[in-house]
Image 1 (cartoon, rainbow, N blue to C red):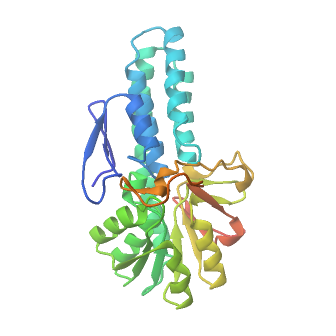
Image 2 (image 1 turned 90 degrees about the horizontal axis):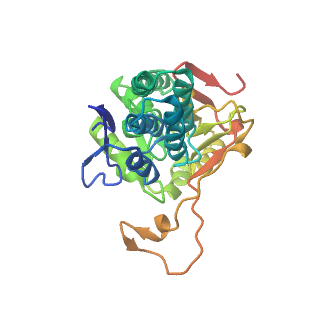
Image 3 (image 1 turned 60 degrees about the vertical axis):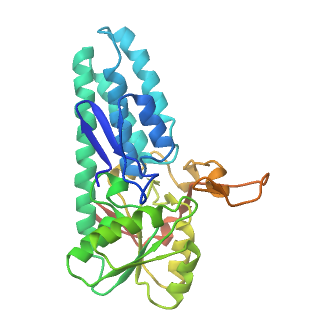
Length: 332
């Protein structure tokens, strides 16, 4: 399965909301559709969001019918702003928007700017693919033969438009014949672990068990989990890391049981403009993601719901960051 593909000035995405029951590809030919796909998690995962955002901006720019920069720029800015407003937490989204904006700011010819925007989007895509490949290789070195590794949410090829980050580490270690196995949390409320991680682990042939989020402590206490590897959506300058809700709980549990907790993420996820996790905006999503499951109400009507999409894990709980540039251990 290929999560994102650019073909004949159209963006092809795999609708991840339908997996694993249906494999459906959507052809998006305008930036509004790309923005909606990002908001509704048809495309998701921080690196994939950044790639989709870049292609969405390129699509919007191609549709602007003028040769005059004075007319092109305000229309482009509307496109860029709409894409940037889709999700507030993932740094990769804003990295992509900033790079595309820089292309426009550096250009003087509208036609050439359009070509350059497409080129930049393709470049961002290739960079994320290459980064995830290196992350997988570096991270596999941390995984010892025979280990069982727990991962949370989904940070595989679907989420990264490449080889995967956290899940790429697990798959790479498996491919090195280390005899490893995995635990995948179902990841409430959207079950991205059950729907997506389980699918990717199965296809990769990695032995694994699917568990509910609240079972992690039980298995850590039993001594069957040797490491935790997760992805990230934004990493502050001090190392505080935002990831799918429930990650912080796993980090605390890992510390209590003496289990190394690793974060696998490309450099595009690091945000040097913010000092700590206190500065990370946490996305609050619709209550229906908790009160409904595949269109069926599972909670009483007219109740209050809190649905933060992410939490922040303090840097002191993270043993090391796995990046495309190597391993960064705590305190380095």
